[in-house]
Image 1 (cartoon, protein in one colour):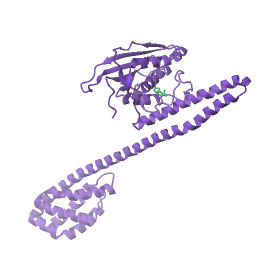
Image 2 (cartoon, helix red, strand yellow):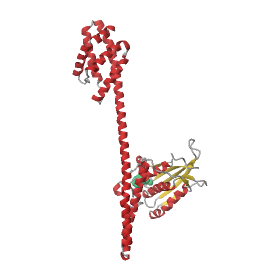
Image 3 (cartoon, helix red, strand yellow):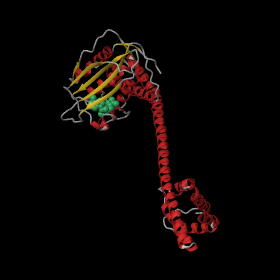
Image 4 (tube, helix red, strand yellow):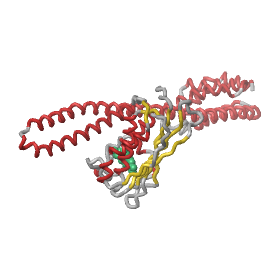
Length: 402
Ligand code: ADP
């Protein structure tokens, strides 16, 4: 052992020269500078007495070099094989057969350890690099998401001013027109007014979605009766139900005397979107049913938590394919052909900008509730229908806004 260690130390300069050359010549081996080969020879001589742990440092260094030079993975087995062959040749030529055999055994075992350490480090470096890359991608996605939210918010605010001008000038035109042509022009100006109302709604939706995206949607908690809001929403859609010949059935919502707490305007908007969609995606003559269930609170719900109202809005419409049931709650999630969208809001399959459900989810979640959809699939012939579930907490006092 001492003999081998002394030999490695004494012959280090020559050995390093021949090892560097052998590595250069070996196909597939990673070329290494003198300094690193020299560090290995030194580490081998120390490891003879102290064990293979010291090799860890050298291999760590190598592994990092290789990461830069060969990002597709290490080639240490070729490099170490070149080192082993060269050391073997020198040992066989310089020692007696008996000594050579014992030295070769020691060196072979250390070099195998080095290969194992290098393989492990390679793996670790590769995983670290993948982790780093995935963090960078996540960061890029976050930036993209942020610029999308900024774009939506800026575009919405910028569109508001010219829209108000169009509205103002159309109203002025109506007032300025001589009476005899007012009736005729009124129809045309009415068209402009309808268009601007719809545009206003779209702009408001864009503003709402940017509030939800940036987590600044404000919920102004007031005492409410959820059943009143559901009924009010349905009442405001009475004409649409009539025109589309869709029957609406509302199961009696429980009347327990005490109000809950929520933002009536926002909840109205949420129910309106879901009921409006049920109308849009149900053909004339269909049926929409609103049923409900009161559920007890969970063990970890706070003291002012009375339980949940579970609303189910079921339609007899075209249904939703099972792989889209989650996606429809993402913003701009429009299934089907956008070219078929019509400007009429409640026409069968009218379609919209794809913001309604994203806003609805934002509102429900801001109330600490949940919304999800259920359907056996999309089929415009067999009309499997869909059910939207809305789970809203019932509070005895306004919850603390965090
Ligand atoms: P849109 O403005 O397009 O209606 P939404 O966010 O309200 O956007 O809905 C997203 C998509 O979810 C719709 O384009 C539609 O494909 C699907 N969808 C929503 N409600 C229903 C429903 N009741 N039946 C079938 N499909 C629905």
